[in-house]
Length: 472
Image 1 (tube, rainbow, N blue to C red):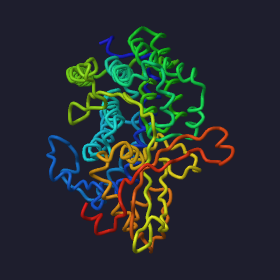
Image 2: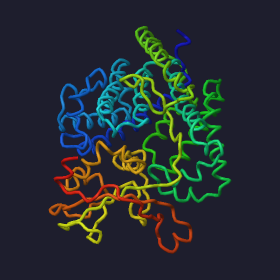
Image 3: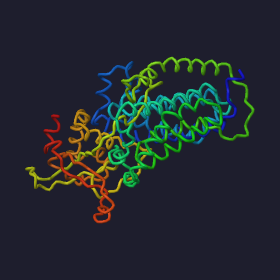
């Protein structure tokens, strides 16, 4: 079928595939380095406990068949290895069917992790990586030109990501309609980056211009993805520039990067490879069947997107094949942070020697300038931001965190930037307090060297010892 392939997208496919493999690599690396404290056999939300109560049909995963920390580590590191091979172009050296199988492996492995990841993996970019990764299986390699319908489906994902995010903003917080949300967002976002302080201090009119540009990029530009070239390339390029602006203004894991990857598939990049080899009939049948399935599954995401009760980041099938997306439908005006402290004193008092645990990404010490971690995802730091919004977000894991801090658990301490206690001398008590954080002004920064100023609000968790933590 002459219409089935798009030979002009050879280079676009190559760039898309290598970039997607890079995101996969980061995702598997984060899983391998963080899972023991979060999901392991002695983790805060152990996978064995989860698979015992949730059936396979609701959360398909290899870990329903078998779980051990060693097996999980093997799957995560295998995902890293396959992703690195794809990044190096191994799929192009294989027959078409074998290249498809190679792309299927990281998708199946990461699906197995996400479906047992519970709260730690309840982020929209997990489903976005899985949905994009599933389509990559059918994009082909050097034996065939890129299929038109798969390129269309990739744009369909990008459209839903951007347009859904635009709609949730217009329907949500009034500050998006008033163009004032960025007066607060850079200060209250989940994990600020090294430049977020400077973005926050941009003039008010600049913030309003940023919001207006965001509305244009998310509500108008996505429609142009389905127009002829070079308009579609211009639209995708504008989206890439917008996402890069977000990359430098905060730490949003790989959300921005996977969106950029999707936009790369819509670019018409110059290529001297025009001849299209014959496409195998079996490949055409498989691709068209998958396309029909994904269009059928798009019904619920579309209904959700146009609904006045639109919800963000929801999967409508256990394989995460077609999902709904969105971010920051509401923007916090005030930043709160949970500060965790421990003491060696046998009787905890207010004047005891309370020492603060320092996290890698979330604000703590007012003098500690935020670092750039994205696209790497610091899962505990992100959940600590949610905990500060409401204790309900921490109900199923915070007690486990406190217990492991009281034990000086090695795997948990690896998730932190610094523990104030030596390995051989764990704290006797741990407590948590809620503080209000705000960015300092230019004058305060010069005088104190601190980028944050914090004010005590209330107790989040009273002083707790090991026996009490184990009862939580």
